[in-house]
Image (cartoon, rainbow, N blue to C red; front, side, top):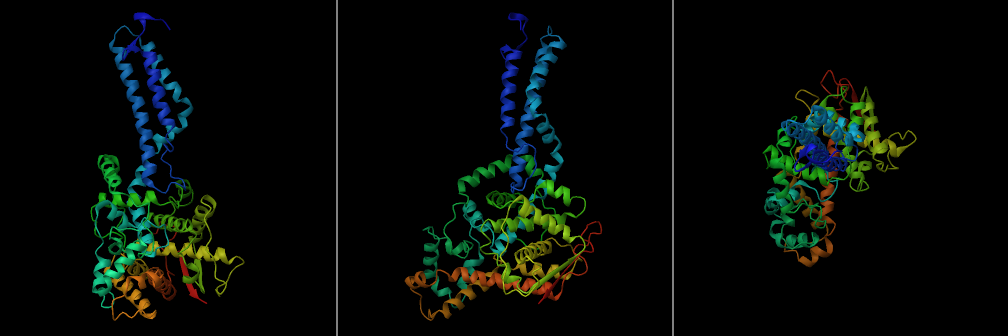
Length: 484
């Protein structure tokens, strides 16, 4: 290249030198983005993470476009630069992008898909959080009340109010508080109020977000105008895991935190597009996704608290219509994409085994999770059993009624172990004799509620239609449960 005044100048250097350096920086930055395509794989459970990678990719591409525009405008303003020279500079700026042309095209063409994903993410995350906080077989340490406390210092009202109102336990609150704090390995004094630290029997979870991190996250969410524009409810669910927080964007922040901490996985958008998009309505697709995410989250813990072999013992399931396709999608997402664990079977189960009892129990579990979540998304006028199941779910740890039941169950267990509640319980006695009672009381309540849900499905099976949308493949599909 010729030197001297004949060379076009940009930013104090020759245009060729300047643009080569700037372009190389942008291309290098784009190539380091892990997922600029905006595609959600089975391992990308956080929609916001997927969106953030796509947003960075778009920003890099737009920066390159702005740079090329500025270069061309500057060169043409010099007057003595030919259009051929300006075109050659632009060509040199585009050349480093050639190996990344496919990724760039995927980034730009994903805008609609990313927008739809972000618009449904609030409802997706609400579904996962309701199941996690209601039935407690998901990942520990990411219960919404814990996240809210670390972010805002706000206690849930129901646990302590119900305890103080309990005539058998209210007077022993100091002893119970001392045990709860010791079990939670903290001196902050909030373990009893939260209650959601898995019934005060688990250690303080390191995954809980500290307040300073929440403040930084809140700033990011506030200035991210595109995410705010795309945040909203697809439809109102029939239960609410955080009824004290009504503002949509504040709810989205807490739910995004829980979603980022969740390690289980999800259904890839490629599997969803190939198997369900255009065939099933959005409510049924979200129910399928929610069932898979709940199952995978439990699998990460070895299904330690998913006691399906107890809940579904001697219960047979028969489905008709296109629900078999839903089962196939959930199975492929859980066991082909994610390599999840099957649910253990019960040898005393009298329902038909069909050669592989573990597989049968697992498919029944997936179907049960689908029905539970579908009840949360049901439309007015759909099968009455959906409304009955939703009513059971609604009375969860986010309600006063549930905590009244919990403390009564704990009092029953303490009385049955000769604690003598007519007088104050010594802290030493609680520490020595009740390490398992807090968790055991929780298991009793969950098992009772699951038994109630299964009983409703047995007594009034959804034998008419799983979905009222005539365009959905589950319109006319049936699931019938029966006891053996």
